[in-house]
Length: 363
Image 1 (cartoon, rainbow, N blue to C red):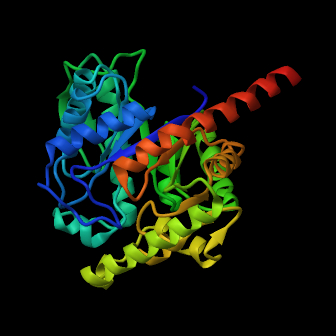
Image 2 (image 1 turned 180 degrees about the horizontal axis):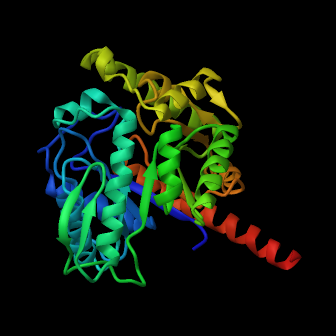
């Protein structure tokens, strides 16, 4: 496929508009939502990471063993597991899931959250550690002889792993971060560089920067952009749905209390989303910033609003910039995934297939 659709699952039902329910590690929900995404035609599923949430390795294992074909994207923060052990854990999980694993390396955008797990490095130090971590992980995956490790963050003697990804099916590495330091590391290591849903102009700027940095290493990088599509039979109904989502999310935030100053998103990516929101409630054709403004830009929070046809056309605008991976999730996670699978996913694939066929005929 020329494009990949990535969904997102959690360990229990919850969103900006739905209060958490059920056990924190809800085995039944994990199984149901993974199977729902597979039935809807998604290609891959993101399993996110947070400092107070269940272990993503186990969420991924359960979801993977509950499905047959859908692939997974496990978010992992360097700094809490030795890279030699992490390389073995990734390779073991990948083998358990029949080579369906990718890893998303996230360096951390909040000092307060990092410190909950005892990490006191600053922003640039965290990205330097991620670079050192990935250096080691890739060496472990590729070396069949013991070797010594010595860098600014890690030391080991005669490191080797008996389990490694197949040489012809390496584990893809996704990477995110919008700072200059992050983009430098992404150019060296990212197989797929992940962005939140910014304006077309902002997205092109970042793609150009990462592409140039990757070229310095003789590499080519794919790109992923994240959105929260809000679709309905008519455009008016879609905007009504968006306003209801915003009203519900606002009430939930008021009930939970405002964000504390030390928990406000510090990452450059969050700053860029706030800049996007400052451009207006609607940016470009139908990029809606209502939730991004409400949550301070601290997460995947911008939406594309309209009919399936209109949202598919909006996705094609990003496709034209070079994006080949779309991470989409709704505010009603399970039901929205099923809705996307009915029209949005097949329609977008059909439009891109027609465009590619026309380009081949003109060539």
